[in-house]
Length: 300
Length: 300
Image 1 (cartoon, each protein chain N blue to C red):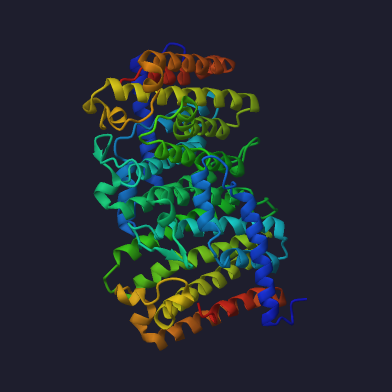
Image 2: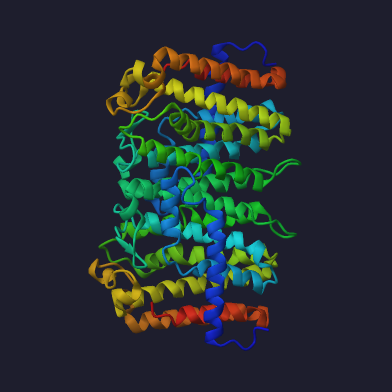
C-alpha cells in the first residue's frame, strides 16, 4: 500500500532504488580492468560520481505505476542514466561549458583528458542504446519502440539541439521562447523519455503513456526552472558545482527573464499541471507524485 | 545475371548505389534549415564531404546476396554511414588525431568549431540507432537484433576501444597483437556490421550470417592494412589526406612492423580467406566478390 507515505519513507525508498540502480549499472558497464581499461575507468568515473539517479528512479516508479516489474524496467532505467551521463561528460568539455567540477567531483576530461572524455561519452551513448534494445518486448511495445523513443530524444532536435542553442545563446539574451526550447530539449525531453520508457516496459496503454508524457514534460521543465532559481539563490558548496555561474556568464535563465518571483510562479504552474496528469492512475501513481513533490521542493 | 561483370559495370554500379544512398541520407538527415540550423549544417557538411559510401554499398550488396530488397536494407546502409561519419568527426578533433582535412575537405571542427563538431558526431550516432531501429523486422531478425549488432560494434570494446588504444599507442611501437586489435576494432568491426546488417535485413540464415561475418572481418582487416600501405606509398594529393603521416608521427602500422612486403602478404592472405567465405552463396555473391576485389586493388 502506497497511500500513507512519509518523507522518511521516501528517503529510504530513494536510497534503496539508488542502490539497485547502482548495482545494475555496475553489472552493465564493463569492469575497470576490462581492456582497454582507460575507457572503462573513464566511463565508471563519471557514472559513479555521486549522481542522484533521478531519471532511473522516475523510470522505475513509472513502471510500477503501470503495474510493471523492476527487472524489465531496470534496463530502461540504466539506459537513460547512461545517456544522461554521456551528455554531461560532453557538456562539461572545454569546447562546450568548460566545467572542472560536477557534483563536487572533477569532471571526466579533468581526470582523463579531453580525447578520452569524448570517447567515454560516445561509449556511454552506445551502451544506452544497447540497454534499451534489451528491454523485453511485451504485447504493446518492442525494441523498435524503445529505441526510437530514446533515439529521437537523444538526437539533433532535442538533447543535441538544446545544447547547440545553449552554446549559441552564450552571452546573448535569449527570448523566453528560445530559452524554453533549450530547457525542454536539454532536460524535459530526457526526463519524459525516462518516465515513458518505464511505462512502456510495463506495457502502458496509449492513454497512460500520454499522461506519463505530460507529467514528464511539465516536471522536466519545472525541474530546469528550479535549477535556474537555485543557481541564483544557493551557494556552490550546497550545489556541488559553481553557483552564480549563470549570472556571471550573462546566461539567459528564467529568473533573468521573468524575475525570481515570476520564475517561481511558472514552476508552480507546471508542477500543478504535472500532478493533474497523474489523476488517471489514482493511488497507483502516489510514488511518482511524492517523487515530483520532492523534486519541486529541493534545495540543491 | 551477375556472372559477366566488367570493371566498367562495377563503376556504373557503384555510382548508382552512391546516388541511391545519398538520396536516402538527404531524406533521413534533417534539412540544413531545420532548427537549430547549425547542427544540421554540420552533420550535412561531414556527411556529404565526398565519402565513398563503402559501408552502405557493401551493406546493400550483402542484402542482395541474401535475396533481400533495397528498401529494407537502405536504412541499415544509411545507419552504418551515419555511425562511420560520426566516428570520423570525433577522430579528427584536435584532442584526438587533430586532422584539418578529410577527403580533401576541411574537417567538421575546422568549419564549425570543436563544440559543434562534438555535437554533430553525437547526433549522427543517435540517428544511426534511430535508423537501425526502423529496419523492418522479418521472420528471423527484429529491431532488437539490429540495434544490438550496431551497439556492440559502436561500444567501448570495439569502435571506441580501438580509438582508445590508437590514442594511447601514439609515439609507441605497438606489438602486432595490439595493432591488430586497433585495426579490427576501428575498421573491421563496423565493416562487418555493415555487411551483417544488410544480410539480416534480408532474413539471412545463421549459416549465411556467419559467412558474411568472416567475409566482413577479413575484408575489413585487409582494407586497413592496405590503408597503412597506401600511407607509405602514395601522395597526399591522391589520398585526399596527409600522406606519410603515420611514418612522421612514428605510428605503428603493418608496414612498420612487417615490412611493406610482409604487410602485402598478410593482406593477400586475408583477401583469400574473405573470398573463400563467400563460397556458400555461389554466384549470388558475385557482386560482393567484385566489390572486395575492387577494394583490395585500390590506389587511394
